[in-house]
Image (tube, rainbow over all chains, first blue to last red; front, side):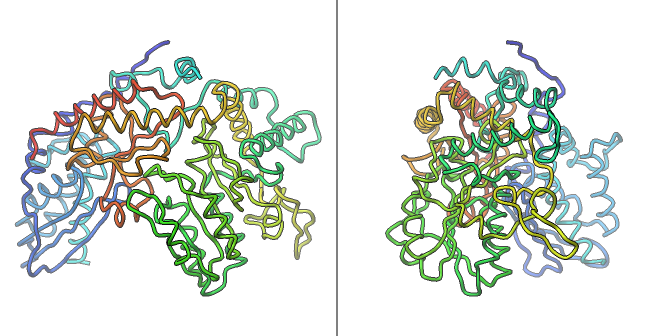
Length: 151
Length: 411
């Protein structure tokens, strides 16, 4: 019986579960609820039932405050933690641009993603197509919130 | 039954995944196919591919004969009284939708009730929601304990003179629980309701006799019993099928057509509009032959899976105090849903995959069961079939050890 192995599918777990990502999973930032949010977005990942709620407070066109809460895997929770940290203080346009760069990275588009900071830890997810939805759940929620601010 | 010999028939099992020999434990989602099935499909295309029921030539006759022989094999496999009561559909979902639309739309009136179990796969829930919305009927649910066993003594609370349809899974795709379909059918018939059974997780795994169970409809999928994808079966009692309107219109399902109206063909063809999946029927027949001839009958699969699932429950509990197994202890199919400490099933499944072990992680199309009964968002699910071994279970246990180690530095 021949045992064949296709290296295309080789899995390197350390590429997916980077240290910084696991740190955000273990110690999530911005987790909780705002007393007075301007916008609250609730989303679900229908394939696994993961849920996320993102709340935004916007002042003078900037994300002044952001909080999230939800249930999900390490990738989706770490992504929520890192993403909310990254967009806090950004203008709405900057935040939208930031997320579109995140999407380019996770699609595996070549380029320099230094400006994404810690979120570069999610670049390895590009090699795990079934996990991309985990990483993007928080992004979808934030984008939905940004759209509501500026329809 | 010689499992080592059976494994030789499955080319796909002989591969490395991520450098480790594949352990395939996602059989409730779909099963692998033996060479005999793959060869039967290849032979069909190489030797007698033609359209059925309408081609007046030798290939057409051979294809038609093979398609109808497949129907006869299916009927014998589920002990149906005659082949005409077995309709070829795409899968169990389509069979259940056929009943919901053709039968449900015809009989349901506002205020009528459809009784379901709380552990139904979305394919035996959503069609009924759609039909209930259109007809004004209402959904009710059987009382069930958290392990998936039904509180049959409370059946009279929910089974009333308004109940028209009782639709239940024969075996739960999540909890593995086997439902007492025969007792349910008896009670349902006593109030004049018909019984629709989702046999997707029972027909491939245990002997099923529609006559003995006395169910009115039974749907199942070929691909979960070593046949190809895209072929499934809906069994229905003759008198019900004859009374029902067609589900889809088109070729083959008519007797006579004018520009204004049409009359219908006899069953089963009344429900088989358009060119059918002959390749699928031929492959499914080959899968049934494989179960009967090589495996020695579906009862052998049931015994084998019972051994594996009991062994797996024992090994997992011995090895990991943090494991939580869902479903009943006894009378369960070869399906094992579990959670592993606080670890999310996606994280568990990703690390298992890196170890060559394929399981399912998610809600397995039973979202309300997870949320409201199990009260978790998602579970891991290992599910067995005829070619799995105790070594596969050992590999699962070993790989879960790796999961634990990998995530040990988190929380």
